[in-house]
Length: 343
Image (cartoon, rainbow, N blue to C red; front, side):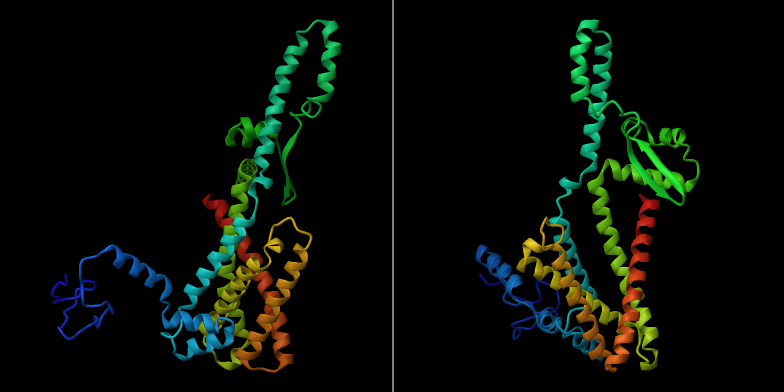
């Protein structure tokens, strides 16, 4: 049964009888009790109805230079916000990359526990061995040379062997499993703040390698975001004579990155056997081809957006490329350092 409408059920704005849709939020004015069919209908509309901005963005996302030009020129309602598109495509891409990694195959912690358990068993075996009669020890020596062949040196076994700033961080497996972090500091003479910080992170990564690899992906995401803002400043300097605002370069690089992530998502479906971190012989070929496509995309975007000659664009392309590599490396390292201090 229809309910007399005096105000919008969605935004509470006043309505007139002649209105079929609310002029403020767009909802229909013929409000009635919600039924199952209404619920299903609203769900279907929310899934299938793409507004004009989403359609236009999908249409021009393949041309980052054109998408940037239109958005900067003032057609803001016609396209999705570039930050929104970037975050969505980035989340989907890195989510697929992380899901494609077999973290169980790179778990150092499981192997560490196995070695530690074998060492403990060897210690118990040694006690029993010493209590055996002499005539039985000859037979027991066969066990010592086979099953526990790799366990006799557990006290000397090194789970961490890392050199940084001319200092060698070496920590035995038993100590990682049995001692507290403060006890390890004292035993291995980690006294400075730098030594304690690095050794703590190495021990955490060794105990939980899967989490460490996931953290690396997180640092890569933050590094990518920081690099986009930083490389836009480099382009602002390179094209300073064109008197463009910094935000124009920023929008262009956001759109380029969005397309790169979208290409990665599509290629992962087209060629799933060649995707990142799969045990496939064509992995290197896939990465090389994908890298070539990215570089062509960046060069073409620069050529069409900034409208300079091929020679000037080529020179600035290589300056931008090397600047990107340096900035990205610095950004990831900086993100890792922040993670070390906070976590």
